[in-house]
Amino acid sequence: MLNKDSFVPLYYQLKEVLKERILSGELEPETCIPSIRELCETYDISTTTAKQAISELVHAGLLYSVQGKGTFVSVRQWPMEYRETTCITDEMRLASRVRALGKEFWAEVLTIDRVTCSNLVSAYLAIERDSEVLRIRRLKKAAGAPMLIETTFMPPDTAPGIEHANLSRSLFRILRDKYGIVLKQSDETFRPVFLDSLEAELLGQPVGALAMLNDRVSYAESSMPVLYAKSLIRGDMCKTYIDLTNMRKVKEMVINGSSF
Image (cartoon, rainbow, N blue to C red; front, side):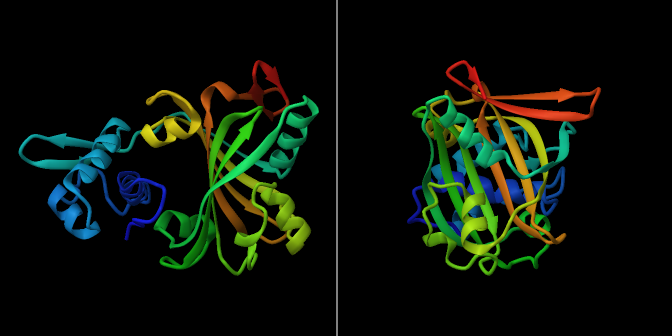
């Protein structure tokens, strides 16, 4: 169900629920989604809320409407995508490089809650469907400007009580220093997306602005995932370089015109 006490608008919560059902394959291409009335009854929301969620999914290309028939799941598109396996250094290196430029880097906690994981999250974390997971949403800023929105999922027993830690710090450092969990490797995917209204407001960008979505599954010593995180990065603060000669990728963020 949707959390009416959250700062996250109900339309956005519904949009995320439907989006995950689409991306996980639960809602198959060319199938009709529940009607506006059914969505309102199921999630106890207003017609306006349901319509806004549907409208943003149509704008994102995940749904399409047919007059007099309903709203359907779009046929899946296959955009060019870059995927790689990397060593874990990014978050700590990012913070240190920003500070080396004399700029401030910190994270603002937006929400911390426990939710029933979706098909998508359970697959990423290799856990049972409907398991409870800890969800941490943070807004990361550099040089006073919002840089990215990060949502992290992890099983509660991975790092008990981590929700009470100072999460303005690097999550990697907290896992290492407090729990002895050293993240060694990540499987990462990068793809371009357009910002919706809430994301644009948080990142200080116009609605529809281009951003980079980074999906990351991180591991420690074993093959069992420790966490799954998705980071929505402002398009004007992210550049990706690929060296095809050495098959090496270097990621750079840009702050006020300075690369680091």
